[in-house]
Image (cartoon, rainbow, N blue to C red):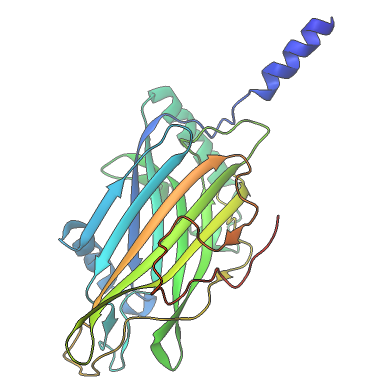
Length: 295
């Protein structure tokens, strides 16, 4: 009887979370979105970014953890479209799509997502914005399994002064293996680089800001895992070198994103000074985000 009890404990402790360890091919995407007031310009601009020469991408995968990276480079960071100079884009959206390789598992995940979505509150909160059309991407016929939203907040008096606001994080399922008695962790690293010309015409390049967010004990589902926005310090952006209405290019900005999913307790902080990003001494911001919370 004692042997049976020991075997039962070992078996249950090795059970895998049913929304993890999904064998699949995945695609990691970084989008830049325009302010909502510009409406119709959003769709065409994103299509240009993802199919044109300004879109740079690379993907990687590891066995013990899942690691993904993307970069997106733009040369129209500022605009004078509305008469005053402002940022062309104010939202960074990080998405990961997954195509399960086992048909039965794909059907099970789709059914699970439909069930979870049907139980999402429809009367309030951003969760009600989701539909299965957002989850199933066509024509690829793959499934959204990760989404994060970071806002670029400009100073009211100077669009060249910025801070990041990490507003949303959702994980619907994962390729990363997570045991039933554990939770998924995710580390999101953000590095924004700028290139411009000084007043004398000489080229200038600098890291504008680097942030690393280490999220612990994430729950699978449509609920936003960030209870309140995580704000970075203010930092200087690429300079606004012209106020002319017919000038739309002020320099080049490259947004680099890396996502690492893992199970376990590697980090002591939810949000901390980045240790895996650049050690460039010219970085304008080298401190972590303004809110550092111990677990």
